[in-house]
Length: 332
Image (cartoon, rainbow, N blue to C red; front, side):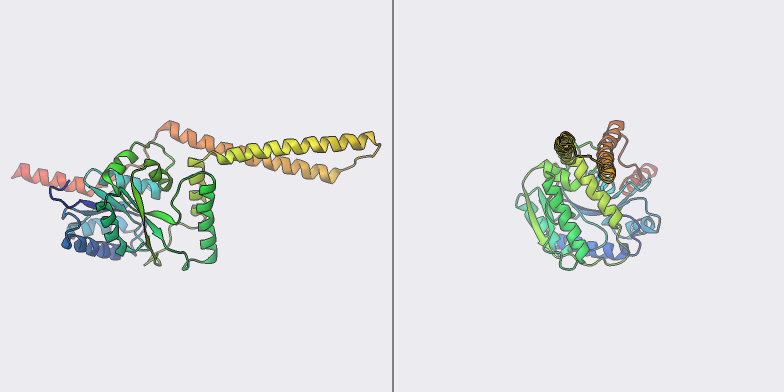
């Protein structure tokens, strides 16, 4: 921690195959930190912590190279791709040991860096969590806008407390991160976990930019999987919906049974191969969906029970530098 009045800020930036955008990201974040230090808003010991999530390109090499020439830049290299949420958590847990507050931000430069000053201002006003929230989605395609809005509304309907139009651009104080570390679950959905921590929070609104370079790491398939993880990690509503459908089907079967018996008593012949086949396929489909959903929950329990580490750090540049410094002092 810093000995002066200003907070030590660490910016945590998860990276996966970001070699095209990373030099510009480092340049812009460095300018932001220099400006905040010059205005005496943060401490000189503030840092930018890049977390390489098993990249297959030159991402880690760029982080190492800038670490040698830029005092702000440090990094963690995970042993393999652990996913965005795990990589972000790895950076947050590392940063909380050396910081008063932490800002998480993606490497693609879509989040507006100009509001970081407002983040710090809100933190100094006593807020432990400052959420970066998009003002609008006018720049998105119709499908992107429709699916994103549907995602947030669905989560809220399912009972998951999330901030509308907020991704992972936020400031958190050290005490929030200390309590966040107490959540041991394997199936991470930080947008849902952080509101559970509580403490005083506020929102800062901004306009989201286009990706500066490279390709999105969240295609439709990953977005759907992320949304499904968010729902099943925080809500049992889908299971209850299946139970409700089961009761509805049972009630329907009673009505159909009464109808069949009445037709039998009245002497009508019931021949209904088509309706029988439709019923069998419909009920069979319901059963398979129910079993699949239950299996998803059981699978998550299986992962949680094993208690495997969420990520493994292969290289910690800050730790490496400290060891080198110690060795130099010993040999001198």
